[in-house]
Amino acid sequence: MKPDLFESPDYYNLDDLLTEEQKLVRTAARDWVKRDVSPIIEEAAQKAEFPKQIIKGLADIGAFGPYIPEEYGGAGLDQISYGLIMQEIERGDSGVRSTASVQSSLVMYPIFKFGNEEQRQKYLPKLASGEYMGCFGLTEPDHGSNPGGMVTNFKDKGDHYLLNGAKMWISNSPFADIAVVWAKSEEGRIYGLIVERGMEGFSTPETHNKWSLRASATGELIFDNVKVPKENLLPNKSGLGAPLMCLDSARFGIAWGVIGAAMDCYDTALRYAKERHQFGKPIGSFQLQQKKLAEMITEITKAQLLAWRLGTLRNEGKATSAQISMAKRNNVDMALKIARDARQILGGMGISGEYSIMRHMMNLESVVTYEGTHDIHLLITGMDITGLNAFK
Ligand SMILES: Cc1cc2nc3c(=O)[nH]c(=O)nc-3n(C[C@H](O)[C@H](O)[C@H](O)COP(=O)(O)OP(=O)(O)OC[C@H]3O[C@@H](n4cnc5c(N)ncnc54)[C@H](O)[C@@H]3O)c2cc1C
Image 1 (cartoon, rainbow, N blue to C red):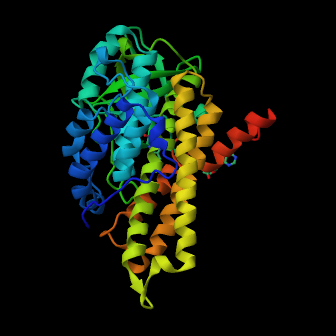
Image 2: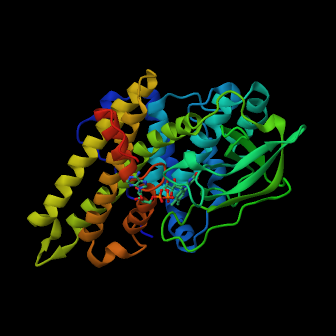
Image 3: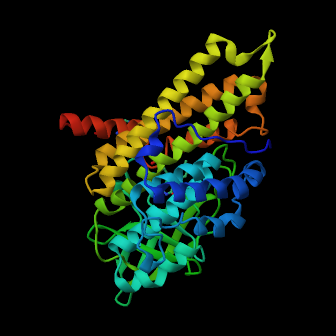
């Protein structure tokens, strides 16, 4: 792969809106990605392997639980800092960002928010340091966009719960030490349970043959009469609203993360367009190529503003789920279109692993689907503005 020459675009001087702390956090993440992710990520993606050696680095830059309080091992940062960390990691690779998102927003967040003090003390510091890795089991083979229909269930057996069912498309599952699993009680109410690797009847087969997020491990979670200790149930919230709150936090991270992927594609295409000559001129001098580049920087700038404003709303505790949906949908779509256009600017080189664009493009095909598809987020906005439910 080519050396990482990335220069971050900031067309509207958005750095003026960031605090010194936010900029420091971003610099640490950016430097780490350049040093420890860029040199190894193409090979990891080609081999379809999650590069486990980067776990410690992710913990060191605060990517595991950026906004979880320091007393539990988190970085105690604000939401914009969290977003900036996700942006920088996804500038390297969406699969690596997925690992960090899951760990922070889908494993640490529910334990922090819905767990008791004992559970927080037991799991959060180890998750923050990367000693434990976690995954989040919501999606099932027959219930993706409609997770409320889940069939995974647990029964009260007196001194333990008996868990049965299956989850699929679970990021980090093949190597996770713990899984936060959403399942229905005998009364049909959804609860989160912490399932630990090694519990009898619990297995995590890996999903192979992905053309997307190849540097992220994805798998199933199978529960065959798993005895889960009663103290592993998250007691402080039940119902579908609990996993949806986790998804709000993760979707916010995605809205920022994909800006990183888009910036990397734009920066690569801009440099290539100035260096590559055809017909005796740089290809960047042709209007058709300038149109692509000019539209890219316009869309990146709009996405940056959307993410920043959403971050301020999150910091004030005022962001709604529908606002988060809008940003996730808009920004992923923006990044995917930029990746496709950037790939064209590089001509044949656009499909080569010498450059990051094709990898970003394929990764974004998962990002546009997971954590609520492009269409589902549109329906959420539609319902929010009309008050009418078009889901069913
Ligand atoms: C690489 C990867 C990693 C993932 N990681 C995780 C994870 O860690 N944990 C987890 O729980 N899940 C994870 N997922 C699952 C992901 O969240 C689901 O794939 C996603 O929610 C969509 O569900 P589905 O694939 O079953 O598609 P479906 O729900 O079957 O949807 C298929 C199509 O139908 C459309 N559709 C569905 N309902 C409606 C409707 N009412 N109106 C109009 N159109 C509709 C959808 O928009 C989509 O285009 C991951 C997925 C991938 C690909």
